[in-house]
Image (cartoon, rainbow, N blue to C red):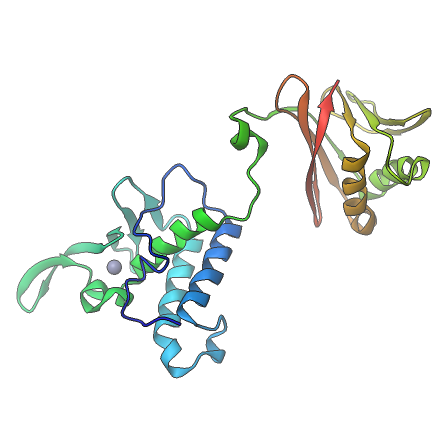
Length: 268
Ligand SMILES: [Zn+2]
């Protein structure tokens, strides 16, 4: 646990602004929240906080509510513009927070009143640190296009009921439960989806919006099957999207209900 007087903009020894080009995700903000609560030794639930945890805890909560609303902050090269709960805009830097001009003991000043009381008095600074940490701690895996510089281009998409998807994949699973054989998949525009494993084939009527032909490695199918099997029956609709990354590499995503996964495919 650390003291309340340290600069909250520097809890991990880095005085830096977030960058305008790095995405800020909900998962990243959650990770930042955990890190800051742990850093300041503050319980997540206000009721569980000791008297001395309450001041910083309140500031951390206020800043977190602010950053969850991405209309209330904008990252610039040399500051973050923060809109506080009364609509006033503050220009916050790693080491300073500035608001509209006001009078302090009869003299005009632009220093944020909270910042003037001490760094932790200014929740704008904490908000900026949430955003910076969210970028650093984001647990979301880098998407293939971010890793390679390629862009993912949508090739085809189809929506199926969970039951139909389960019937298709269940049959193919039974053909080779050890998942050693690869699977070929054919989307026929406006007509059907077919899966082939060895000499076996299963086809279901469906309406893909375009043609797509691709192969799934057996082990990738195993991942997909273990994700689909428990929840598909209760999921009314699942959307399958085929994305092209390079001439032969691609990604198949499955999204619907609690299902949200992506597996690598080879485009044929
Ligand atoms: Zn401030």
